[in-house]
Length: 318
Ligand code: DGY
Image (cartoon, rainbow, N blue to C red; front, side, top):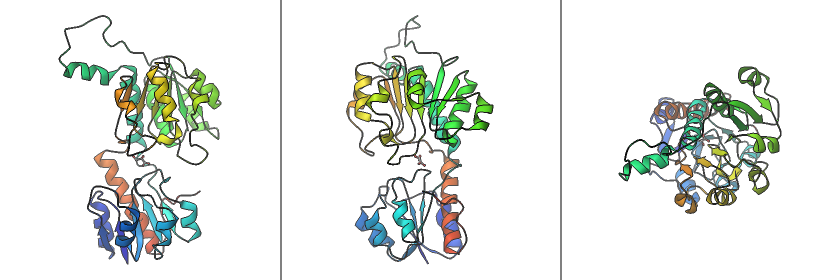
């Protein structure tokens, strides 16, 4: 049976699949394929290993009638029409759990970079502007005793909070359900979204992108932020009204933002590049060698299981 891997990922996936006797084809280019090229190359495949930059919609699904599984190489799966795939009997899987720590590290890194102005200070150094210690050079904000608001207390949100707790931060969270173990571990308090936006000194977004979370942080919610607030997003850009956030940053209505994700990836609103009070990362939440290898292994394992008639390890449920 054929398996198509839509872009180059760690070779362990190809090795595992080949060892199991599958005919593995890979798009070796470092960019996503247009839908028609993907369909052409993946023709008659039973398994498709996709990246978050591949749009797997009704058109692609209808044109790959032999598919049994779409294994997304990401925890997010907003790039796939999961309901439609499921209605055609195709299983969709993702890679949860294994990228939690890597992504939480990036969220914490962005919190630190924003609160202590690392990127502005780095730019200042590279421009040769350093003339010695000064009492008011790049004054930032303490994290200790400040409040971190976690929007979406799933695995990554909780892992970020645990890190922040070690920095002496108090934790509040917004989530559909109460997380009792998390509350015990971090003394976190569940609050409404409005209360979180109003109270938190640092807000970190960890929600998946769904129709319900699109622009969840819109003008009304963003306007509630404190004037010294920091907003960090390592989830999906579309959860925040990015244009409005830019407006707030430009007029210095909040202290800073740290972004790993953007509303119209891969294009980035050029206004962001002009702002000093924003730290920009190129969607590297899960980008460690160890994590990416584990993601490749899990995606391959899901394909092997399904194509061998077993249960997938991490199916997506919508
Ligand atoms: C994911 O897995 O959804 C992340 O965004 C990848 O870094």
